[in-house]
Length: 449
Image 1 (cartoon, helix red, strand yellow):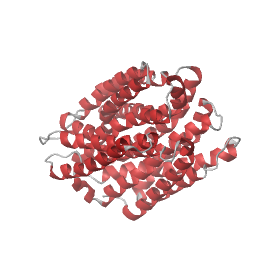
Image 2 (cartoon, helix red, strand yellow):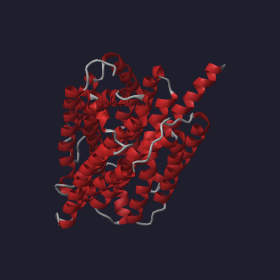
Image 3 (cartoon, rainbow, N blue to C red):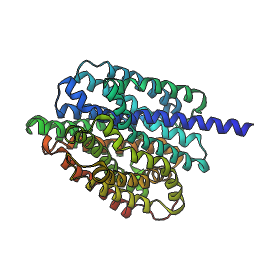
Image 4 (cartoon, rainbow, N blue to C red):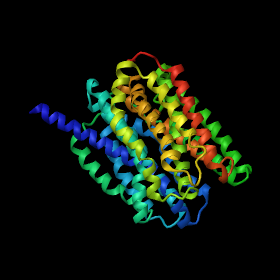
């Protein structure tokens, strides 16, 4: 009986972490599909649409490191539940936004609380499941999160075909409520035993660095590279260097630099930047291009990426098990390269291209590459550190993945609005293939720490 109760509790923990993290990531992808309609209704151009995407990603990627640390210091359950409540409120405010400026502001609010939510999910799993069960739990969590990222366009397409774009934010509210009800009674509270302090200077420099770089990259082309965007790039780069200096001297850093002494941890995070940058940039440009240039409806665009979700659902968990047995390097090398080939194959996509022969082969290759990559990557990151550093490690890896998406989306307009799609294909294919090469060079061949 006690065994049944324990298993049921762990099931609810897994459901709560999957649902909460999925809501945060689903929102990040589902908005992409609505960008053409948001732009048309609010009368804004491509740079404003970049800010709607990157406002959320800026707050998420710059504060997610702090979010992981706050969970370790003040209690992982407490911080996770706070993130849920704040994200629900932010979603409601986005739905009620009367103009693009307020929409960007409320997207930033979503990102702030998403920074508590996303790393919290993985660290809760890491401390509520035993080591023997943890690999499978992480595999399932990763698989469902990846499905959520790809299902975003499908769900968004259905909503946008029958209702206003505002409903893509309103749908988060009941999902957050369900997650809260599952999390409250099932998650066991945990925190670090030793006394730690919040790294406010580090968080501030991370925010300034990413904000400066994002502003410069988005506004540079729009403002014809006047002084202000260039100044933003310089400030962002300088703040990034100073961030590393602060972290090397801090007593309780958000990013303990000694973690990067682990070859697996360093390699996985470099690889994460390339892979998730390619994923974010590719999906943003593809869904806009398919609607504006090829003539797909919102629902057709969402359905076009459905094969990726199917592949992830059936095979991602199995890949995690195989990587635990045979080592992650093979999977983390082959997966990104296959993903890059899939992206590159869609370079010639044009009005009149058939879905079966023009779109689906590239989408299938993209999905196969993700299946081979995501679970081994996440497991490698978490197994490369001690359990006491689980929240920090989760925050670092999530920050790298979101920062990669933030920067790549900001770069998309670098050659002008008319070249966004083809530039993104070349850039994202190169990033994905480069991530595979990094994995081959850095990740240890044999399983284990």
